[in-house]
Image 1 (tube, helix red, strand yellow):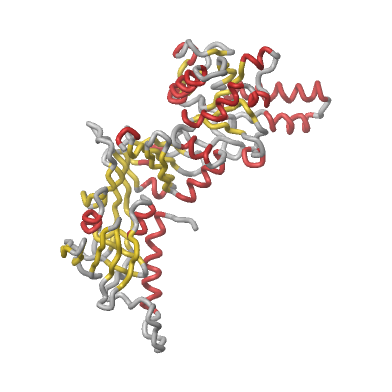
Image 2 (cartoon, rainbow, N blue to C red):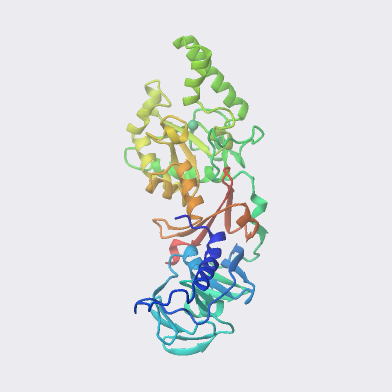
Length: 440
Ligand SMILES: [Zn+2]
């Protein structure tokens, strides 16, 4: 089932209308187990009006025609954090609703502010509802139930344990729409413009003189380079692993065009293919200009001395070298994925490449690797789930959100705390370190 944050709230209203529409039509006595019709239900929908991601956490704002910004369907919270979910919801014959929230018994009177938490009677400044099989709770009640939730600034705040920045910024997520970023999908169906000349490139040879390069002045995205250097350092300190050789990193649009044309010419001259067949074959192994990840500065081709010693560089035999095997096993911990694994040509459009790694950052590389995805199928998963919580092996917890244009227009964020990347396929990917490993 596709969970859509923007639309999920509309469903509540639909159910309410259906309920009120069929009242009293059937006069047959209901079986005992059937829930009693709620005494006080909500007749207008609660709509999501905005999200804000900053140093404090994730703030959710809603609106309702009758009760303004005070109400939150718990289904929405469940979507945003799997930890918040009422259990054992039931109605009493007196029309009260009982449930258990993280082990604490709660009882409320729908349509009023009265509730009991751990059998202590309290009153919220506004009502809560049990409507259409959904709990729609007042913000203050939710904040009382859950230590991680605050009822502030006309919204409900899911607090991060990471201490806030000294100078929090706040800008609209839309500012990042169609801006190139670390997680962007680049393939034949999702090319990048010829003018995109890498993303925040640095000179690797100059910045990291200890690494081994097959070319002068190799360029790479700065963040990808930091993780690359750390990854190569760890690899080369591992038993049996020799020096890693960097074959190719950033390549310009024009260079990619030359590579493709050279490959076509080779197929024509050496294999005797006609131009059409040579072009088709070349496109299976060389990305068409604008569809190469190398143009973004987020891709690295590796090889090893073992292979170059045999006169080879980019070959499937790289998997069998200690260097290639180490990367396959460990690259995800540094934000890199094997981009074109075996048996994925139908999805990626590129034949298997043992040497080509793509930087997508944490925690994305870990998710993709653990779940045997490729970037294409990961995008589809993000689009489907919209919100993803994940924990890495160092104990760090991450929040990943996928925003369509409408949700992006309702979202504010602090770019110092939230990583943002256009997906290059119609969405925006937000990444936030929710809790870092050292604290838990
Ligand atoms: Zn490559």
